[in-house]
Image (cartoon, rainbow, N blue to C red):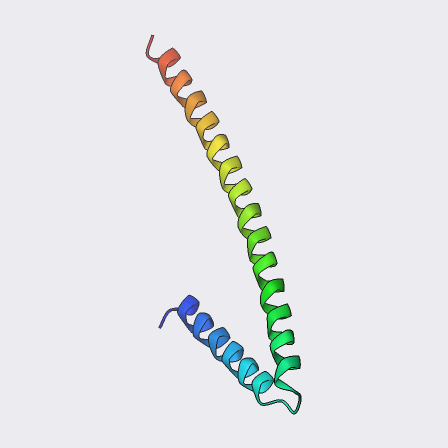
Length: 81
């Protein structure tokens, strides 16, 4: 089993254990549902922010690579003359 899969399975187990602990905690179901909802919304917001940051980084890397490729292409054209 590769390392990434190992950690993915580990964190899935941790999340499942946390969910079971919340569900069986000695408090009302309504309070538990509100807690789960708040946690879920926090995760959604974090995921959206992270994916937006990742998209910006990917666009930046793509543009940088295009610029380098154009520079290399221009140098090759000059060298072949």
